[in-house]
Length: 599
Image (cartoon, rainbow, N blue to C red; front, top):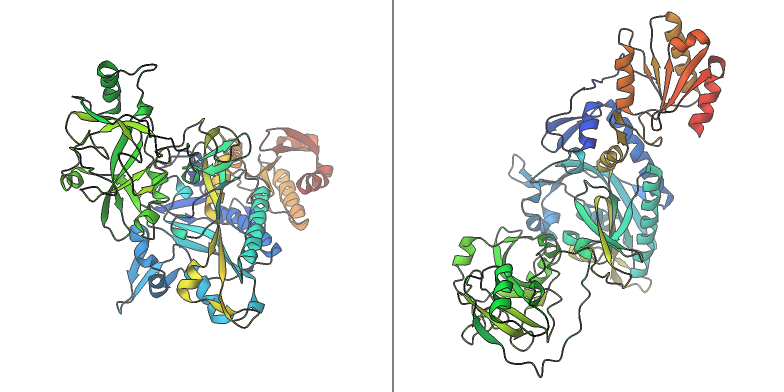
């Protein structure tokens, strides 16, 4: 059918919605693609569903090309499978939980690993059934604390999630590479630039993981890259660890008076004024900053710990969140935040502003032998033999010449500080540069995490039970629509790539003569018969200015104007992206457009 604006369920807006923060949010609402139902929740209108459907079609075609098969699970899921994998607890406040009238617990699915695993377990029992890849395009739900940016960070969203099941790790690697290549084809067909970057697995678990990030200044993810080809999400960057040093000849550490020095800046100034060293002045990089933090567990509990980092570096809570769960030996998403005054009151051995890992009246305060019992983690730059100025756990005192490995120990090493431009890439490919991006896809080698928990085993070639290994692969479908609008717009409206536009051509009839509308109607019908999707602005009492404004706002890539040029036997064909317009003879219009649209 031709989409006729006289009957299409559509109202465009001239003003930006008050809550809109980014261009895609403003324009998708103004152009009539979506409407806000609640914070982070949106209704999809006819034009929005057209674009969404085209995105889904591309995804389905590429999934089919690698042999993946589509299924569809419910969004309302029972509690029991998620209890088995412990994710009912590990998700914490991040999911929507509810009960039926009988008191049974359910959740709105944030993801479907358990359901896919149980489905394969129910139907397959032999290695001969494998490999198999299954996928769905389905609504997901997260109780997002701060929904923002329209479709980019919502509470209800659509994802394509697929899962591969293989008998061994080599099979998993093949399935992973098939999905990786399919993802690159999907984003290429969508016309969306993405950069694959090394990532952490987080609450999903598993080993190898990559994100597909669309570079944009509004992106919530920071990633880094080097001239030599290294790319990674900042959470996954590993520090180039300096070599350990021989400290056998190092002088003994000493505690010095450093009154009124609770900050790194005041400490450095005091050290240079009262305890200068030969050769070069003290800098923040010579100090060991000990930061008290709280890990907020999925159960709601808090575990206080201390992290030691070079004083010239800023603690990065997100980087610590990526791995803190393994240090605490807890699963699920663990948040990290600054310790509160209430937290500090419970540990009077920590002297705020003067916290250190050793030499407090001869007794360590934190670390392996710490009297407070607090876990002490350090940045990878804190290696054996390095020497530091740090707190003495006494008000107004610091330790000078404290040697790591000799004077203090630690419970573990954690990537704790921000990644800075100019830091060396871990693969030696050069200094790092930082950029922002939107996560469009994420792929994982899950391994046997879920299949072990849920008992998915099949008979192998030797007739013995073997645990199946899994891969998990997600694409944000609604997020892709937003990212495309974000990347393809000007001050007048959206400019859709042709592969995802709600129509192939937008015909605008302007003027009052019946012959204008008759020709526009015929051209619309001829294009439809030729296999093209047509949007036709047939509104009889709407001004040309409003029609042109709507056409530019809606963003169909080719606009055809049938109007006053008809007196000279021509119509206008306009490229929405470049703004270039050409006059085309009426009797050549259909062939011209067929050639143009078939591109």
